Length: 379
Ligand SMILES: Cc1ncc(COP(=O)(O)O)c(C=O)c1O
Image (cartoon, rainbow, N blue to C red; front, side, top):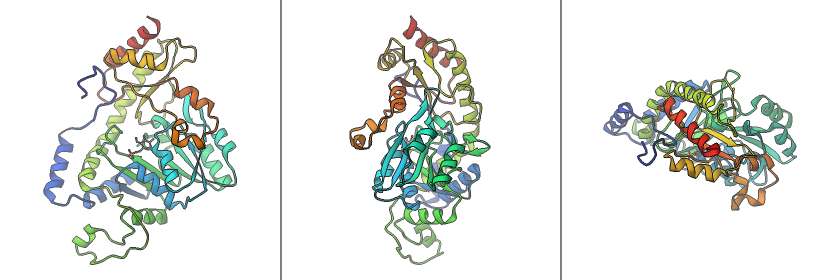
């Protein structure tokens, strides 16, 4: 728990089980990619209902591999959100493809607008990367329809949404490839870590090859005598996860369902408490599908007399930690050359505040945050 804040932004759901899992792995004397990684992959694939899951060093490399295995290359256009973490878009640049930013729907739905996606499609478009903000699903029916009509690949940046559902399917399992992060503040935390999921055997085999230098066997297989050598058949990378992290991931997966149920309850408390705070919009209000609630963001109304940064400073003084998900990627210096007009993203992002969200939050914490917000805005 962060000692500086009365209510921190996030709290890790770790306990003795994670400590024991790490100890067991250390004592097994196999700490790099091995049996724990394989078990974590099997558990993850089972949880999502997909045929293949590949554990990786983080989600950024998962997004990179997604581009590679889908054959995205120099000059190809990839439609992506700007209201996301920069890694979503960096991955497009790793393969020298061109990011084409699509706007979001609006304050009430911070995911990409399918109408704007369609407007941005050109003969050079090869793929769409969606990002399920806070774990709330993008309009996947419309997006998959566009993908079929224009023959585009779909990559789901599902970092925010493990176990989130859309029409009975899990996020990450709907497009061609799904990418997940296990960075320490994510719903599943392993410190650093990521996963690539797909139902396509060929894509999976290719990603697995690229994960470890394009080598045809892993050290673990050789240590077990399953093979004695290897060939290198493509220029790959070292994007592997290790068994220490995988063993934490296995425990975290077991706890995920309960953790998310508590977060859903916290979100209901928030929606209720903020219904009495004028001038603040709670995006995705009333969405009752099962979602991960990775973060809880609110937006100040356009007419609000206080700026977002003033409100954040005032909350900070009250001992409430906040953040901002996200500064729009197209406004970063390095992406300005790809920037088109994104009026909705720019307007919403300037008024966004991320408030604390974790499963151990209490109703009193939520009440205290809503009351502080009310006093800051109207006191
Ligand atoms: C939406 C999104 N995409 C990609 C990433 C990158 O994940 P990682 O830190 O595991 O590389 C993150 C992590 O913060 C994220 O939130």
